[in-house]
Image (cartoon, rainbow, N blue to C red):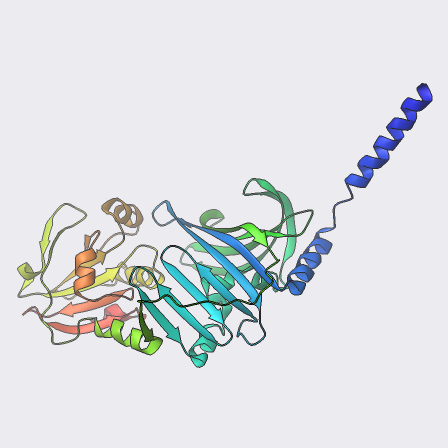
Length: 371
């Protein structure tokens, strides 16, 4: 009996060893993940993106269903289909389309436009968050074993940006998370720190990850939608922006300090309308210039900051330390629409008679000195 028990324990021990192989070395696991991606004909998943907006202490979330199918005729080496409730984007071969379901509009891109759009993958939210793009990078170095979205993960990382601005040291780290047993990509993070403290974290993770799509991608355009070229779409957007010489639409709104603002009350003075929102890169650069101790608007000009996205609380929170040098209007959806704004920041200078005398799309350094 004693010998039987010993034999059973020996069998159990051997079986346990067989079922729990030694974990792969970090470099071996990364190489295996890269080989698997290279050999996969297709990749599909539900992508979750969470933008930790440190500017206002909130988070923005996105969810899309995406599938990639290998095609060397495509400028990125894959065809793809990415869709959520409001939009569908697809790239098949050399041509791509963007479908806006809310506006029932299809925008088509030529082969030249498509190639240009994807020359730098970092400019595409779809490609830059795709596992095949992430695993193509050679910079990854094993960092640690950790927990990612509630499951064990092996983390790899590298520093992809570092800068000193005034007294702030910014450091941005790219992070990749792999399943420690299979090497399957679990997701990734962009971790931005300011003087060693977390400043903004963007997290992406994959759900329902698969590599077994058998048929090449096809897509049938929906019927009853307005079809246009990208050139026509851009021309339409630009045509919607008010231009020099037009009478500035009047509007009234409540500022973040509770005061009532009416544009026509400022006849006899020039008005600078700054259409921006918190967290927009160019908008933040412009406000940094406007907040500089040496900056001052002309005596006959009033500055007005208008955000179609942000609430009073968000604007106050963001500018609490930086300062808000202008009147500020939250939730300015109506003026945003009336002035045809689609690019941020956009500036309108209105003369003393209420006529638009200057329009600037986007921000160029030193803009304030030209006012």
